Image (cartoon, rainbow, N blue to C red; front, side):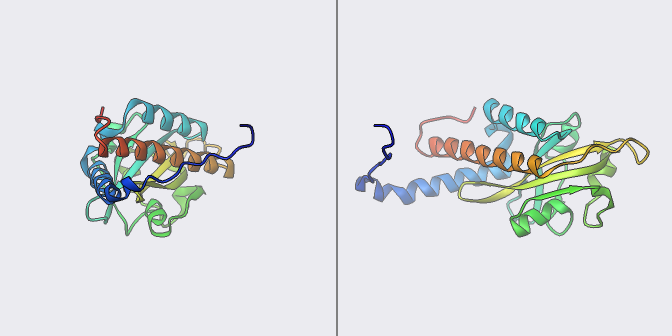
Length: 201
């Protein structure tokens, strides 16, 4: 009926199972965050995130997940040409870098002229021979808690190269929405796995 409300009544028979399912979801989310993200991150999730990153006018983007000790962020996905040198091959302490501020505050950042900011860690730039000029970074939630950060960057190959245009508040909103949708996609897959209704592809 037009204008009607969707009402789904709680089935009390499920109450006894809720804590079991929640525990299985948490255990699966922990595995995804620690070692299995590349296996878990299916084609639909990847295509969604890449499209979001492109829509922000970024050159590339990354998914950074907290390690088991919750002391470092590990890049588990990168959309750029240097992904093999980044994914699983770098660790950022939560005591350094602007991305770590997102974990501490659970607030997004939109920063242009990043390389002039003293809080920005230069270690990854030095490793790749690039200069991060602008950055978006937003919290990434799944499995009921903050699990990491999704970032998007504009880069240049040296100090003398032309400066990219930078990011806008609209670009940040695009990444925030994209991260929220991705989180729901991950949660759906986690629930399917917890219920035995799907396999990691």
